[in-house]
Length: 399
Image 1 (cartoon, helix red, strand yellow):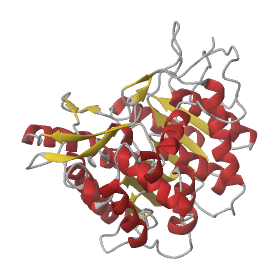
Image 2: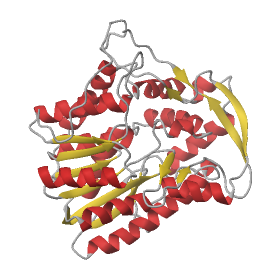
Image 3: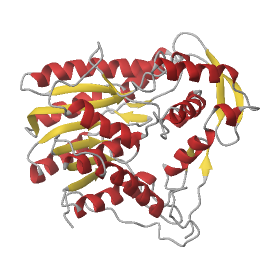
């Protein structure tokens, strides 16, 4: 079939297998052209198929020579529907890793469940013995608690007062005002249950109890802070409440792991185009302005540049990882530079539909969004007939 992008709201309902594979290959080539780092050799990435999780897996494998196990929840092709982008990404990654002689296996299922945790533990025992790095990069809107059976759904809302600001329809380029009413206490609780640190801690506890976590293992989860203009909807909103819980979890995990030489961190990353960030009002407009400023200043980074830098310049530098006063790794340091933020804020105050393409890189935002699904990749023939049914290797297979 000839596969074209079909965009509905802030998601694309199709993905291109050749384009996704090419996009993964481009990220792999970026890492292979950087200096190698001496880091973890047995890596588990929970949430491994897109965005920062995929980039974490690529950087560990091709920058540090690590064997990897990934956990994701992706759908194969069916009838006239393509597989999800994460499915194609995973297949492409595994093929490239195995060509380099690296072990790569993926468990596809609900990472919140005890069943998937048990499958991963069995896989580690069979092929790695223990893991020395656990990356937690899940981005799900829902979670069913494995012990209580309760299902939680997260929301993107302010806490306390309504939020009013500019936003943009990325598809049409229409700039408008948006008002979002505050979350209820139940919505806050649900969002923390989905996006907070409980499941991360459950994973680490399960790995430790099964003796498949190395004594000196590192674990890292991802967060975002952003500029003051997004605080009400992000850092001080429901997502921020969940991120506060994530940071509290990191401190508990660090206390547990440090007894045997292990470490736990939250890494605060730069704003990038992901399926998750596209869903947050205000953020796409902010990112579009930010991209223009950072590209003009030669500071722009995507997911793969960030994750390579996390390993090579933060986690594995031979000394203690540099952190802020709250123990967080700050990969958003370039984004939050005063000169960058001052320029972004001036653009934010002035921007409207008449000067949108002068003050923002909306074209770059749109391009990055399409590339998440394998579209707009240079060298791919999008008029060609392709088979969307691409099989994923059975977890643990070396074929």
